[in-house]
Length: 413
Image 1: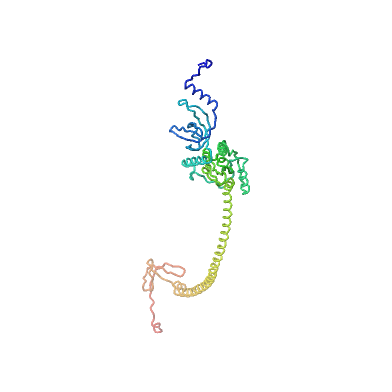
Image 2: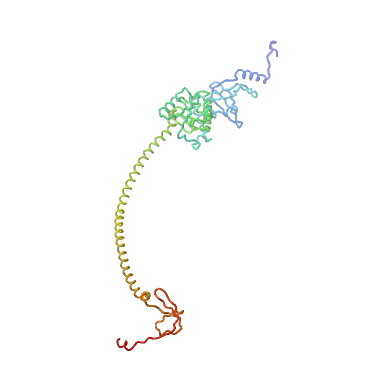
């Protein structure tokens, strides 16, 4: 219609809604809206639908799955949040709505609720299980530190390491520890230290602050980066009463950055102290062993001296018996020699050879060898053997004559 003719401009519903959508999306393409969540729903599609309201108005909000899956918490009715995104119109119903791409929790109470939700969810996944936590190296040489290069945390860490004289090399991976971009910085710094791979242990942390200040250490992405680290991680965030998701995910939690530095050097100092104790104990045992050895040696010496004296007595006794035995043997031999000489003399006197030596002879028949003791045993023509002291002679008898004893001889006898 021509408005110049005074006629009203007539639009179809879709045209009006389209114009409104165009105007809104051109002018409200990036806006942050704070309000309280109500009518929250999360259907099977994975998208979030809820109403964001305050005391005077309400606004429908949709947060599609690709954006809400990165949230560290699950929205709930009554939670006060800050949503960032664009404002548009839902054409089918002609309703004003916001398409949220980011969401943050407002207020300490809501932040604590978000913390509890993320903590419980990650715990259910096993990210905080003691079984996956690794022990610290006994003798680290290089300590990686993820923190602000200008904050108090790095100064405290360096002071403790210097005071304890650990002689460790510190490798700083600088990162913002507060603000919207801090979580990404922390993840990047952890990744850089793991790629470098020269650190033996990593300390990640910062000084104290409010829950909002410490919130980057409660981000899910930071917790998962800590768990994924190939190098053991010590979390040292805030003060002793501050507990973050990073503390739960780390291999070890320290109350403060200074305490983390002490934990890093504790193993080395404990080992040195243990070596000192072992040295003293070893020296004591050596002294005790030497003392016992000396006592044992003295006892053995005393025990050995008694047999030596007895051995000497037996040696002297053996020497005396040897002398006596030799004397008795010599005497026995002398007696036997005299007896042998006497028997030899008797043997020579009774020996036929002795008789032959005095001029006698032995006559035997040949070849029988029987002795001829009387002439009456002989006859003419017999062959005889006559044995002298120095030889023998074979003879044949020519005549045999017996010589009787005369009467005169008989009378004399």
